[in-house]
Amino acid sequence: MLSWAVTFLIIAIIAALLGFSGIAGTAVNIAWILFVVGLVLALVFFVIGRRPPV
Image (tube, rainbow, N blue to C red; front, side, top):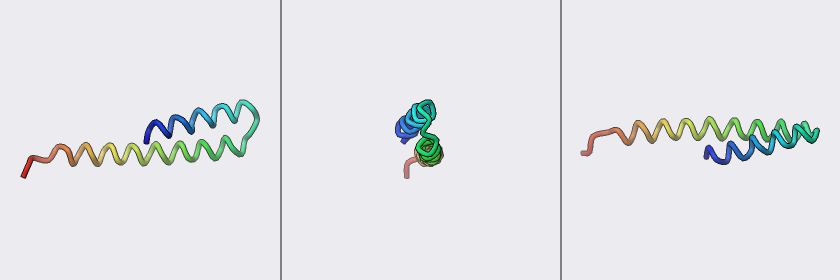
């Protein structure tokens, strides 16, 4: 998930450098959403993984 966020961030940076502001803005939004979702999933799996076995 975080690798996709980095990919979209790189796409946004390249698009911004080339002057495609609409594509850059969309790519930044997608990267931000993927980053937040990946961070939440990582925290959930971290907490679940620390439970003692039943």
